[in-house]
Image (cartoon, rainbow over the protein chains, first blue to last red):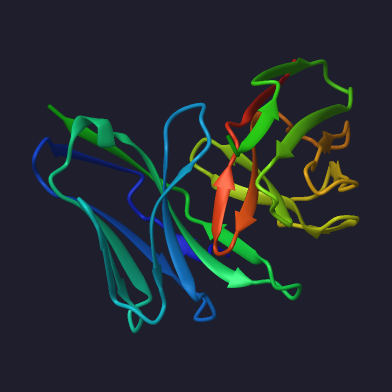
Length: 115
Length: 110
């Protein structure tokens, strides 16, 4: 049972336009959400996050929106640049019994930004 | 210069052999994790450790083993019992709410 879903395996946009990547989750116990960016054969790098008590977090060209009632979050990149081309993973966090964070990842969306 | 190192970058083994993947961190993080990435599958949790000498199974622990004798080190052994070991393996550690990832090891079993 997939708790974090990224239903679009790929997305292609033109340079300068907005990229919108979507993520849905099923577990209402998730309290923190993160987006990671990953290039081939490299480890994921953290991009932006949002706490479940907020509905929006912005960092430069990247904005994450959270709709708790719909259990949906989205990552907006504007304007999109060719260097943004990568796989983007949505992740949701829940505390383990021992108090550390356990992340559940979606399957990723491959973004291609065309010059 | 703090971070997570994984070695080697690429690893080839014959079927039936055990192989150990290295993960070292100098971030002073207590919690460490091992993930596996397959095409179209995202990242799946194999094992995690919240503290030295303690570890728990993740979602796909069968055929793998780990140890956590030192805070800095969390090696993963892929045993011959793992039916499909060829994959990209990622190690991570947690600082607060955020996980930091190593560069990964591509394991190919021939």
